[in-house]
Amino acid sequence: MTKPVFRFAPSPNGRLHLGHAYSALLNADFAHRFGGRFLLRIEDIDITRCRPEFEAAIYDDLAWLGLHWEAPVRRQSEHFADYRAAFQRLKGRGVVYPCFCTRKDIAETIACREAESGEAWPRDPDLAPLYPGTCRALQAGEAERRIAAGEPHAWRLDMAALDTLAPDPLLFRRFDRDGQEEVVTAHPRRWGDAVIVRKEIPTSYHLSVVVDDALQGITHVVRGQDLEAATDLHVLLQTALDLPTPRYHHHGLLRDPEGDKLAKSRRSKSLAELRAEGATPQDLWRRLGFGRQPTPST
Image (cartoon, rainbow, N blue to C red; front, side, top):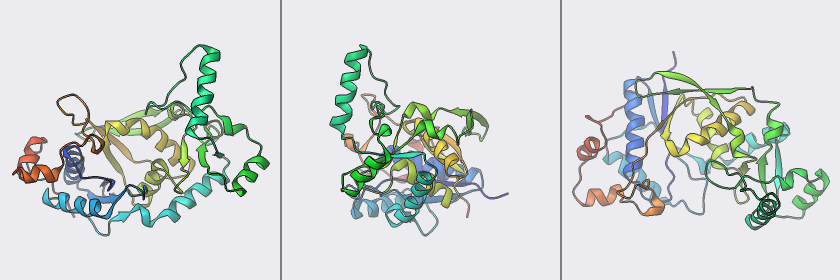
């Protein structure tokens, strides 16, 4: 059998914190226990926020934790052509459409519909309001004219059109800490017509991650519960693009004393700050529940 392949995929838009350390160590621990491989991927499609010094710090922090990964490291910013090709395949299948709406446009449309119905507008798992479908109804000629005129636009998945490509129910496998698996039903429609190519870059997190996982042969995805709902959308994209679907495990999130999840945006204490305070890698392994250094097989 092919060796299981795990990956840790941080974004270099800030310093790693304990939550990142836990996810990285857990991936390495799974790879060790399952006799698999451990890869590192740099998810830097957001070229406006990702910085070289943060990428260098990722390598430094993970090496300090005692982790080893295979070379070369895949950097998403070097592979936009792969994401464009995947998008063109979706476009050729007629399951995407251009969207010219601004956030203000969407908010105004939703406010009008809420006023008419007297009911709250539904929201996706990230608590953003579902797209009201304004641009789905555009005539092809009008959309082409606006694109040719240089109007900023994104591309959205057409969930109704995707029904022709996806089985019902849409299933994937989830595994626990002991490797036991169960079959789970995905519910991608709760995302509405999600953005799949953003205005400023030729991809999105959802598109790039499923392409990368397939190209890198990832068999087991281990990531936080905050991305559990995104798996529904990823399984749908894998089906639409004829890509393999990995097994998934979504671990619990580390939280601060107020109950908020650790996050760069909240300025959660970084690994560098913990190191400066005298913490050792062994301290963190124990603090995060690992009795030994997780070392994947080679």
